[in-house]
Image 1: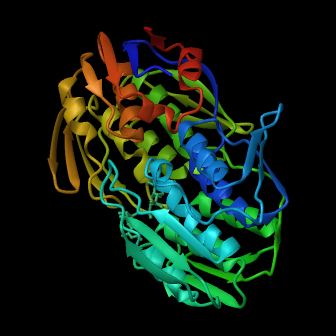
Image 2: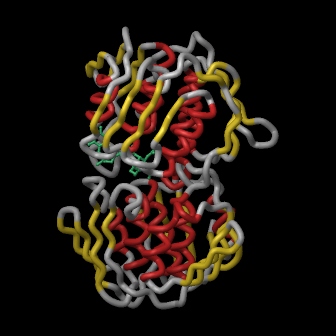
Length: 416
Ligand code: EPZ
């Protein structure tokens, strides 16, 4: 994989693009497969960097992981799986914190490295630990590790101060094999939570309320391995929807679940894009003009924080001024400095970015600072006059499967 993407701007995107399986569903379902006895087979898992790192971690702990010929991911977890995740690997992947709940559930102990602060803000684990402790686990933080043991587990009730996706997922995984009833109040409602619940239920767990803010789980004694297909990636779909909007293009996006795209569709239509549902896919037509809109990111079904950088990028050339408020993470405007190098006019005050639309952006050498910032820079580069070099492109390959082929497939001019 290259370490930079070079894009020649000024071309409309046209054609068809197929969305891959959801990164954020795949990662947690791979983690949950640790609870399964037997051979788990997962369909529609994207072959992206984050998935590869998580599979390396599982292999390092003694699991067998393999991609079959038809692209299915097979995972076999032995009873002898070690409960410790290797520091070197798990510090590369925030989502390795999702091994906490499943390792505790399988081995009654877990030792994972504290996920480092990442590029979008501090990533505390307090709600994860509060949840696991509510089920009887003992947790300690020392030497940069989280150590958890679960002598006697018993269903419990936990209120999440913030509807944390990861905390909800860790509690669901542990509760699925914890005797008694567990209730999660103020649970996260993202589609990836529902996908995890469907996967755990297929394995034999008894879960009700996934997708609402109250989830009830009856612990099962043993969960069996199943074959399961992961949902499509709503953020990848949204990113291509933004590409059609910002270039005045016309693309067909296949393999989507329209309800998952509702907040993204609503805001892009407010900018003037025309979006129509056509048998199982959506068509997005940009009109060449972008109206300024205001965005507030919120937990699902609010506007997704993972689309915030992408909206910021396309609104740099809107007619008017847009106000973007980031309510989920405390430091998710790092892409602003890079967009300003391309001529954007953006002022950041705390959790708010004020974007004054300009006539056009110009190509420049820029750096991706995280996955979605990288995606935002691609969108800016598509609209800019001239060439843009996006460095640290590995961030993009963490979450967008086959992105170079997909971009060229819709007419993007990649130079390299
Ligand atoms: C998941 O991260 C996603 N990652 C993120 O996607 C996504 O942005 C985020 O959910 C919100 O939707 C995966 O699913 C692998 P959170 P997660 O716990 O679970 C605070 C991407 O680009 N918080 O819902 O880590 C936290 O600081 C990635 O695909 C606590 O205070 O997100 C943050 O401000 C980026 N204490 C907020 O909650 C805790 O114990 C949301 O975090 C946990 C979280």
